[in-house]
Image (tube, rainbow, N blue to C red; front, side, top):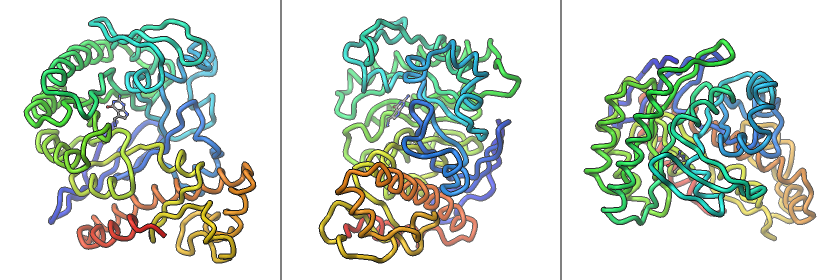
Length: 376
Ligand code: PRF
């Protein structure tokens, strides 16, 4: 994998770059739609590619390992062949999902022991076997096994947790360096900076991560219950230390405003379930603000969903029609909302890129923050 830093903004830390993988190029900053179980929920690959203009999607090791399982993925020739997505794929390592989904789990030096949320069966993720699993999935970018420290952890807990993440990282990195991909294209491995809301821990973690010299680096453990201002402060602290010439990925963040603030602080890659999950519940994110499509106020509003929107659903369907679909619990409601929201998120990051290149990012961003946080 290669990263070309095309331009850094003069007023902020925002950057425009290009990541090159064996499955194609990614123009950064970029938003990556989440396809947890090998599908971006309610969205076809053709809509993802042609309408949403997704350049890379996410998969989750935890889910794919449990279902369909490694035998099927290996037989398919990897996830790209299995789900028909020919562009880059990034997979999360599973640690975070073990914590959010599994009923019973325990961390030891060895790894993360857990029971499946599907059938209760027992499993162990180690820093090494999640590399092997991500090799079988065939992710272009794989993630290290980490412990996502809760946002309200005390200093002692955060310090111990970070020490474990660090030992796991060294094991995972070593194993990655000693193994090869199965399908003839290159795979890469991103380490993850943890350290909760404590600047000294974050700096120590970022130094350790930077020293590995990976192709790209991730910031984890944010948007997990800490105050938003702390999240922004931690991004600043970490990005001071992470190398300039490698992409930086802020994991699982966030609202449109969080993404703009992240870009301003030098983040290049984002993912979040919000556009799809909140979309399925009737929430639409637009450049003019947030709409709850179940609201009565849209019942007789026949104007397009988003007149300036970039996807065909934005001008094809009216607010009144989408409200009707949500109230009637029609499947199409979830499809339309997911396509709209993902297209908006991808547009937001690509428009940020254009503004960075034009030298107008800061003023554009300040105006966008006001717009995207408005409740319509
Ligand atoms: N670690 C991993 N995946 C993640 C996170 C993390 O800290 C987060 C936190 N926002 C989301 N996804 N491995």
